[in-house]
Length: 353
Image (cartoon, rainbow, N blue to C red; front, side, top):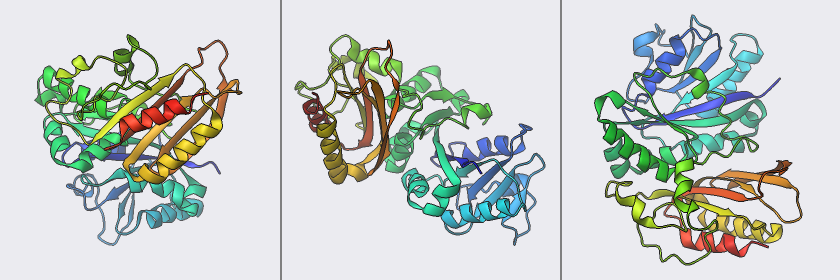
């Protein structure tokens, strides 16, 4: 039986997760979706759309979906769902997990790599993060959990865009882009979003396309592709390297976010052994601070792309397709908490052949 794809839906309190879930659970989309909802959220979805016996754990929906409220451990909930599906008591094709508004999605994501039973039946597809256009700036400034939710995201939705001005939406978008340039950002209203924008994103698929916001990279195009030079970075990390920092006059609205990102690019190939040793050492020291990282690598002696990605200390790599006529170039993005950017960039530069 094929692995069941799982989407983690996260976002700070009041960001609109429940509204989006209602849309997923009530829309006639023809998909059988199991939603695992944490009952400690700010609003229990059951109150509005489910008639649920107090003893009932899993509720069938009229459109082929089911809703499950976690009263214990996530692993137990996933295994129970699997057993009921195996025994043909319920039927579903995918799972959406709603985290609480103050949850760090990291441990939820790690569940799919660290628990053997879960890994045997499920595959993590993506982390989808909602950010409230009206309160997002303040939440990002005051709560590290909100920043972590952005840092882990494979897709970001800005909600409640109708409540603020276009300029405020753009300022928030710019800030989010600097925190996580690999996640596409889209504005939505009242939780209405096409299912294909939430499901099957393949954010944790090693061979999926490496998405880095093109405008994010444009800022360094006019200078040079690698970042080995000393750019005398100040403490206000601007998330890119090798370029004039004057573009940043609005991007953080006066805040230095602890969770930030940076991109490394080079037209020179890596020495595989040097890179392996360096990344191994970096993960040992800074693994807990490294939320997400992903890259397409140009490695000396290989005519194929090498793709890698990781969450905290768990990193995987794989051979992808041949370079063909495409210019051979390494592109790596790192998203983390208070990472020593200059040290990492210099170390990566030192791994080039």
